[in-house]
Image 1: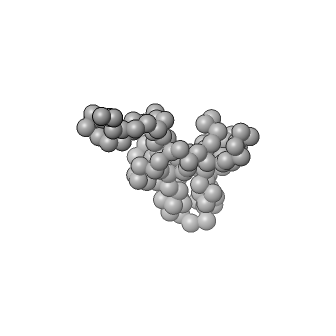
Image 2 (image 1 turned 120 degrees about the vertical axis):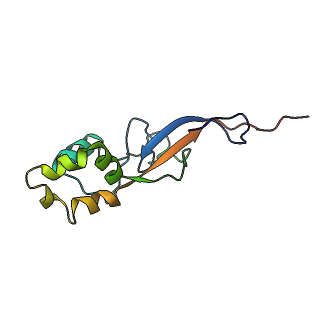
Length: 126
């Protein structure tokens, strides 16, 4: 991320990397088409299977976040960190995916999101 005082955009106060930001900040969204190894499914269940609806406004996703237009796949993250090679070495790992492990991870796309500060006028009054 680059900062400058020459821009015409509001500064960010929060950033996220996930499928889509949840309205409840403690939760993480889950791509509904993602395929996972059983251990990953356990972690997903800890996230309550994605975003729940907020009791305050009945929204599931937080539309105050703006997509930064930089998608990344689970394949990218797990192959560079070495996790994917470990999953592939697990006993019967291929039976948990409809396609190959690589294809399943390449279709699970996450996005970078940013939430700007509260609105204000970026131009000075004369």
